[in-house]
Image 1: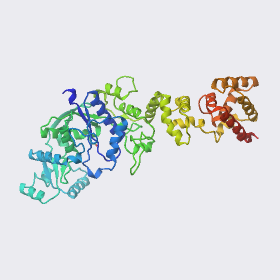
Image 2 (image 1 turned 60 degrees about the horizontal axis):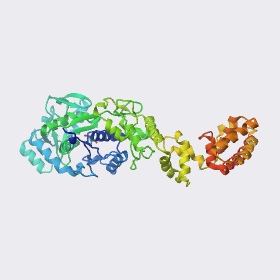
Image 3 (image 1 turned 90 degrees about the vertical axis):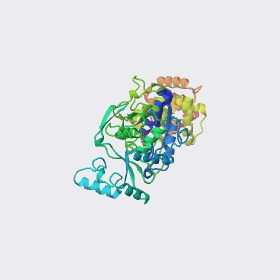
Image 4 (image 1 turned 120 degrees about the vertical axis):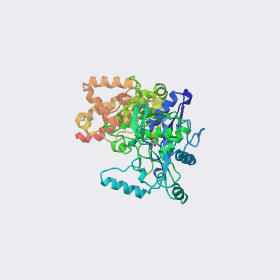
Length: 507
Ligand code: GLU
């Protein structure tokens, strides 16, 4: 197979928001395709009308776009194998269902859902499980047991039916998975799956196989939950006489506890998103984009959940991921999702951004708070506080005092630092600071420190009080940077205000 023939697909069903495990599947397909100079296809598998959710398809495409996973052929992009939405390919599947019947590998079944339910219940009451398969099919109402004429009559009269795959009896099926190696499954453990329904819709199995064949898919890379379907898929390829693609089933994403699969319901319950974007319909759910994650950090984090580069490197651009990715390094065991590690990745990307870029991203946050800062000043502010933040939104908490004077004072700091000498010392400081020329970080720092020594005061105590009055708490970057940046007038106003408001504390 030449590299040009590498064609992979991500084939989600639009049944709700796309889970981050789905994004990881898409990402691995994309990295694999790009690494080999192949094609990445997005196919929408929407044949299960009952599970169709409005808005989910757009959501899937928007998520991939946000993550920087570029689709070569798909619903939005079009392509030589269009349409890429299965509901628009209905006609195609019927022909293939018919063909399997002609070949004797599938049959019509007329058993009603009520009859099947009844059988299931009867078996259950005996502690057994009902399977429609080689052990039972000859006792059921289908084209294997009914006369040809009868079958024709039933179909012509519009009776509901399904087409089932005729699973061979007691045969060992050998196949292999690029991640899991060689697998053998005996067909006696498998049932006669429904492939097609008389409402004109194929089931997942038939549509998936037919489309992978027609779209010339070379590698099927998908979640481990599809591994149990693989023997049937391998048999379907054999029945049609087609070469099967190669398969790779990705390990599950596990809950942060390491126990059990990371489910759609875990996220907001455990305090982190499980979806790439905010989901706005019905039961809403948070998303990485809205939580302030950079898409590059999100993708980097996902890439390492199940794949390892074989080196200590953790930070990868998309191009580096493409260059390094290989299926051989995808693990077999589940990958534990760690929300703290996700934050860590974001902080890494955050710290790597220039002060200018962060200031540009921070600007709307500041504007929303009602301020119109000068850009150069904002860049300076960002440079002072960025090392304490990992997200753009954290910047406001780290820098709010550059914009607003304290409205209250941290009670703990007041209790520890503010005593009967404080009003006098701070008033002296006020007078001293009023005369500092020029009002820069360096000059201010030298002047204040010399003054403290000349007075015989405790440096730590005075500087802590100074910070308390400027910031309202004991947080923030270098004290003299804060004073220099808010300027002399504001520094004096905050000192005056603080002395006035805290005086009563010790009065
Ligand atoms: N439509 C299936 C899903 O929702 C696709 C599985 C596959 O990739 O074969 O995951």
